[in-house]
Image (cartoon, rainbow, N blue to C red; front, side):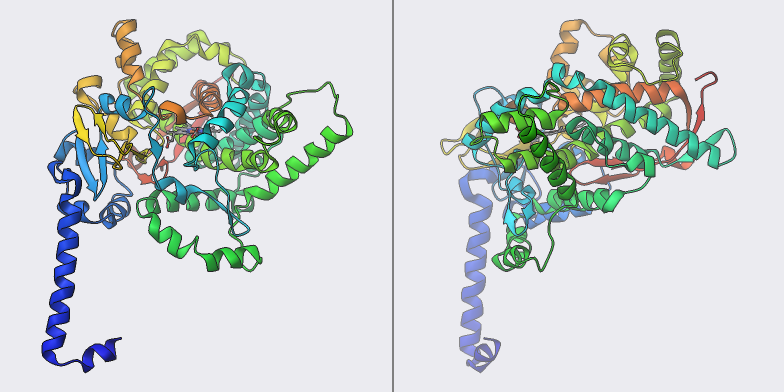
Length: 515
Ligand code: HEM
């Protein structure tokens, strides 16, 4: 092609270039002005290419997501040729609220995992609304708080192992204190805890204090990849999910399956054998897998074997790093502020029994200041760092008072919404649990409704009760059982933004006397 181009006369070459540049210019003008989206403020480059968003997500991977941009451009920003980001609770209501049911964008197709070369849509990744609502309706009750609470003892068991591991680390350092990479250990806990709830068995991360089979590393890589590449789904199609790669995956030449799959397959096969051997067994609903198996038997066309298998993948991807991050953030923000830490310690000391075992969920519900600390953690550090993208219907939509054309990608990032000053006050950057205690109950209910750490609408996090149970129980236990100190250098934020916003820090832990 280059040789043919060079063979042309200089006049013809100039003409070709002229045509090419004109076409390019017209395309840029079209992208910039299409559907009048140019009326919305935002970086000019973003208005003509989605590559800007990809660049931003890499460039800003150690910074707070979207907040500075909204401060600069206001509550609505154009961040793509056909994409708008909003930052107010009104926009949340208009995009995700009752009756809206906007479709998910192509961002989610990047999240769909490949298993032996085949794309396996999950509840999280699917863009098929009929499939989603049928499947979600079928399995939702397996994740209600009353059901999850039945498995509380599994968490206690895992908590005990977690406490023993910390003691072991402290002993190894031959003193009363141990320097611990707490975010990593909490991540291990989250993987093991969620596996206990699902399969009544652990991976063994905490016991071994190591990343079993590289599960955590791979999960993290995939989560980070999807959160960046979701901004430019075409590249995922070209580089990863292209027909050649999928064929090689199907033929077994390359393995693009997550290492969580064997654990899920073995657990599922074991349970299937048990169910078949004893269909009327008394021991029912031992864990979430049991309720999935029962659903599979009752509704095999909705909860297929594949959906049962997906349980393991879903817990690994949606439920592990997310909860680990929330727990790390809770400890970090509390301990960083001596005033808050002191106040919380007095509450925990006076309300909780001096039991050497972990704190029960019922006990955590008698701790108003602790509850306010958890709420404030979710506000200032929502674990999810991505914009929950949706597509407006062809007829367009009214969002937060703006008229938005049809087929526009719209969405909110929890970090930006949780820093809306009109809702949360001028001091949004300050970790202040009192903002959940001082106003009237009605006012607190209203601001709580503006929070989207677990998403909103029909796609609200299905595992939120799992996480809440883990966070309240383990969070209160650690803060009650240990005196925690951050080193000076760890007082400075070290963030990594992937699908979840990880905090990196170490702490000195020392057992509280008598516990
Ligand atoms: C602190 C922990 C967690 C946070 C912050 C969190 C956050 C979220 C958010 C923001 C969404 C909505 C995403 C969207 O609309 O694009 C979501 C959806 C989801 N989460 Fe979670 N999550 C957490 C824990 C869990 C756990 C433990 C599980 C599983 C047991 C889970 C399973 C799911 C599933 C299946 C969905 C998709 C729901 C649907 O589309 O119907 N999450 N989560």
